[in-house]
Amino acid sequence: MELYISNELNSADKNYVINKLIEFNLMHFPDNLKGRYQEVNLYLKNAEGQIYGGIVSQICWNWMEVQYLFVDEQLRKSGYGKKLLYEAEKIAKEKACDFIKLDTLSFQALDFYKKQGFEVYGEIQNAGGHTHYYLKKDI
Image 1 (cartoon, one colour):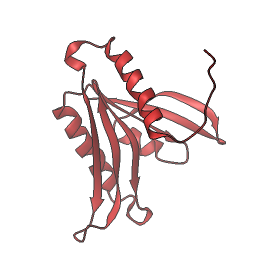
Image 2 (cartoon, helix red, strand yellow):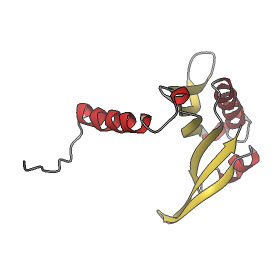
Image 3 (cartoon, one colour):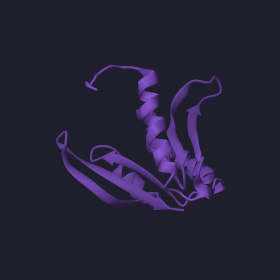
Image 4 (spheres, helix red, strand yellow):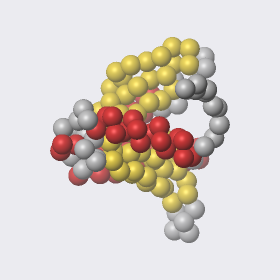
């Protein structure tokens, strides 16, 4: 059999790779953590439903991972990021998560996350000329 490498946008193939990795991973986690996956997306909206920011995250096994947290620039430093993280943490606690993890770049929100109780556990220098930080908060 001869195989080749394909570089294409293909949802079915992408899902195959994701599902096979999940299947493999499940063999290594205890039964009480199997099947624990849930998207948790919180949005900051006004009364008319216009969006001004939000959190895109997921609960996976015993943690929550925040992929994106964004608040429109004119609303930053008004406490909305803190409120979004608080709500996410509340959900993570309800779902029996042990920690929340996320990442940020040096020009983004490192100090903000530290003020919310996150600790840096890793970093990569020269990520586009910046530092890429990985943070965790035990809950």
